Figure 1 (cartoon, rainbow, N blue to C red):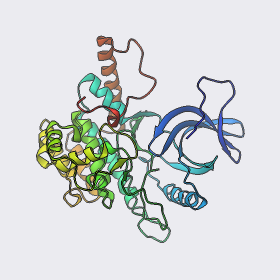
Figure 2: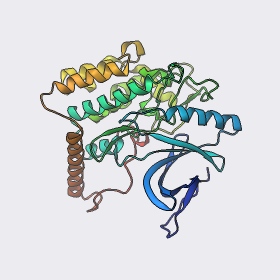
Figure 3: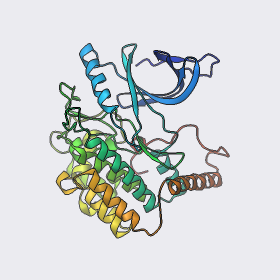
Length: 377
């Protein structure tokens, strides 16, 4: 896309674009993400530095009508108002490319937290996963039930629930980010090309991999994949039994041309093959070390058929909160903040002991997501 970004620090600010009296200075280039690129920028108000924001530069829609539709869709997404959803502030077309300006969440993504837990060789606690899951489910309930000005359901589906789009901020609060890939029932909206799977392929629902109609239950399945990885360190489609079954059966019919919008550790047809082989027995085996209530939750979340899952995010939220409340001790933002800090300390101690990365406090960049890691690791 020809993005310019400074390779070395400069005394002169690099201004991405301006809107009225507000200028957006590039602070850091994060690289490609799905249908665009992510940048960290600082807002300047009349030459006075302000807060940090996240800017997503999308690919040019190619025509005036497409850009108008995008602006309309983002206006609707700006109506999302929930403490666990990173806010979308505005959309601006600059140099022919749409730019989404979103809330910057200081903290760590779940992909980094999962990587740190893998480094220390111990997953996150059940309380942490239940807390995160309940917060995300509550945010999804808000998004899934959002209506337009005439009271009509918008039918928003996030489509990219993954460790990369979920963050825990510095105070232990959970934030769901990046609704840029969301689907909604908008008149005249531009559909994705029929054989392309949006979002992180490794966390896509079965219906997304088969290019079937989506609703909020697809997001709940993806959340289940994330929770399984938090609790066990295992990814649903990297289970040995699932892999063997997929190799034996091959890709399902009509998936040969399936493509991933974002590259992953398997081709889209092979990911669909593994999903087609997934059974409740596989989930039951993967969760055998967890408590019975948590196993029951994951067993219901990770069903291939949407009708067999939790049907609403609100229902899932209440179930997660009930199990969390039954643990007999409080768990909220302070406890989550302490656990993330402990995971980081444990990982640093093991890393130093193994002399892997030397005495540095932490890598400058976050660890790669599971979708970028080779299978079997």
